[in-house]
Image 1 (cartoon, rainbow, N blue to C red):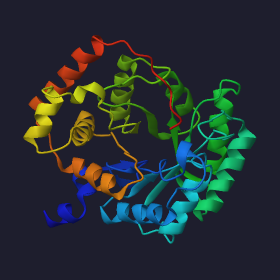
Image 2 (cartoon, rainbow, N blue to C red):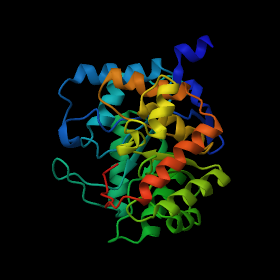
Image 3 (spheres, rainbow, N blue to C red):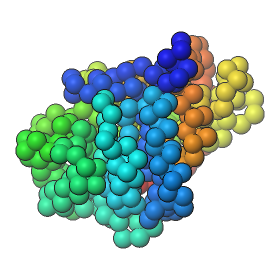
Image 4 (spheres, helix red, strand yellow):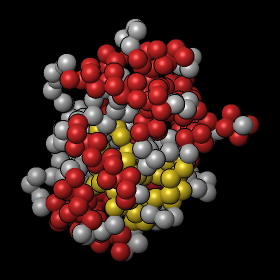
Length: 313
């Protein structure tokens, strides 16, 4: 009990990626430690460094970033705050996007760009290999197999330990697996909106189940969104009050309950919000509570019409 109180992220349980990377199932997404528009340095650099150090104190050992966050800023801050890295810390990063300004995320899945991106990440993170390197987003101008194939080559060269994919379809996962072993999939998914930009909610649920069957970590980005589901009197609101918790914390607990291979990585630029998020891992929902929240979310989603707007995660 004492260990959980001191390291609340440990309450999320563990998942072993690729047979040798043991991570706690609640991680941290380091996108928002940069400036506005995920561009440039943060307004308060020392606060960002303190935030990163606090993640370790709370028991988190999976930090997810990308070369495009800043660009470069997130990776540089992680190294400044945490290097030399403690044993067991897994830093996952991504490549495949360019940055031309605040809020702008052009795709670039060319093999030569991915190699350049990886080399940059190695330098900024001060490591000789990346524990988990993820292809950030398929580029329709570049054959998918060419992009994944280059990442596989870099893994064979010892520069990558394990390979992940981000923003992919079920078909793309299967195609990638013919080239290289995939240990994680990072797609949009949360309680209130489960679609990805190229998959329906039903396909997203199927992807999660595929990952669970194969022991692949599924990393849901934008994990704490609750939207109008948190309205007063809703099932989510009722369960939150029962646990003396915030709706976002219950949304996180719901994700952890959804599948044993889900790895939520809520991100923030605030230590207070970080501490609130991590406490969501300590909330254990009953199956009845999980089903009630899910039923309420399903009824709400079928009565609403909305356009999925892709994000840069």
